[in-house]
Image (tube, rainbow, N blue to C red; front, side, top):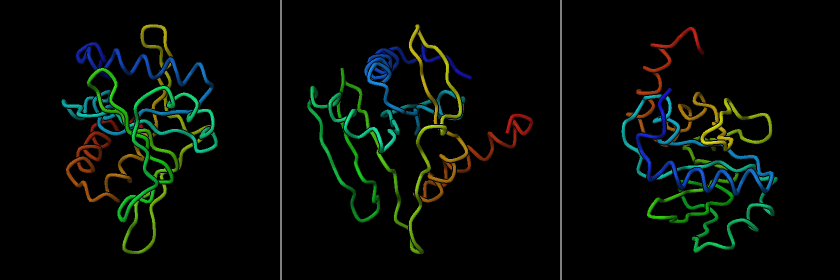
Length: 163
């Protein structure tokens, strides 16, 4: 596992977001490239993806309303119920509620909610929640992002005893 201290700009805003979400009792999980960074799978993080339990939509909307954000209800490829994008201190965040990807033969639904946190740990006194890495492998495959899919697969091959 990698220390977030190596990316201090993203660490500080992640802590701000974690504090807000935890204080509001919102079920959330870190995902995307920041999750892959934590596991040492990638070295770069462009934005921070956070999954939010759809049942916490009302609580989340109260938290996000104090920020300048963009809200989408899905598109042709991503049929996610709610995508909130916000820039905090120069770092892009995407908050995904009911994350879905349209496939040729149906739809991939990222399973997320209470009980769907793979790992929790304290970072500077704030609880950080991680979504399931195995499920991100499935999501990247559904998104046709084969490079990240293969990187996660290689990580699992190297760490078989842990998965």
